[in-house]
Length: 257
Ligand SMILES: NC(=O)c1ccc[n+]([C@@H]2O[C@H](COP(=O)([O-])OP(=O)(O)OC[C@H]3O[C@@H](n4cnc5c(N)ncnc54)[C@H](OP(=O)(O)O)[C@@H]3O)[C@@H](O)[C@H]2O)c1
Image (cartoon, helix red, strand yellow):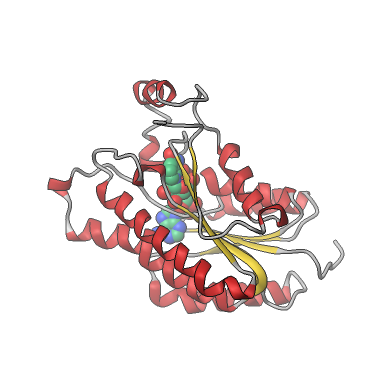
């Protein structure tokens, strides 16, 4: 593979499986080099990186845990090293896709402080500080995509804590758009509806009743595929989306219209 200084680089959290895997592959299909992260599934992450290399793009898989806020500086330094040593670049990124996340239905009455700390770290605090530090290594003209959830508009019992954290990061995204716009850096949130991944213990994937309910409420009349979401992330990270910033895009196929 030859070094191409114009090739853009995307950092995708949680790129080893589910929606993040498709995002990483979709970004590579659009010609980007990709650093993807995993938390516990190193083999899956390496397989995605290998698939990207098969597309003649550079790829690296790094471990990253959003609950380890103190470790974010070290992680960002590692990304810079990989970009310099393995990608032949200047140690900078063009796009950050904040995708990694966890989900679980917890009725409000049963919420604990430990639940709060986990969800707030994974969906808000960790994302905020990763974004802050990634912006320092982002080229002008780049962008951030925050993957949030349609459930912060329509309300799903049991998802109050999760959706509140997603809502908080949507507000933060608008501030990133405001403060970094002068550098040509855009910031948007993409809010998917239900997709049959491992998310929330595979709740949608393994529950035909839930699937039927989602399909019945969806204007397009089917369940989403990961590529319905990954393709949109790639679009948001493209030049075609250069005039879009500070926006929340709901990607549900028209759920609950
Ligand atoms: N699927 C849906 O229905 C749906 C709907 C709306 C929004 N979303 C959002 O879309 C995003 C991706 O969801 P998904 O469906 O792809 O979920 P998924 O299949 O469960 O994948 C979750 C990803 O997040 C990573 N991850 C988990 N905990 C982490 C931590 N503490 N630090 C860093 N990474 C961590 C996982 O890494 P390991 O595999 O290595 O553990 C994995 O790559 C999430 O932000 C989710 O909230 C999903």
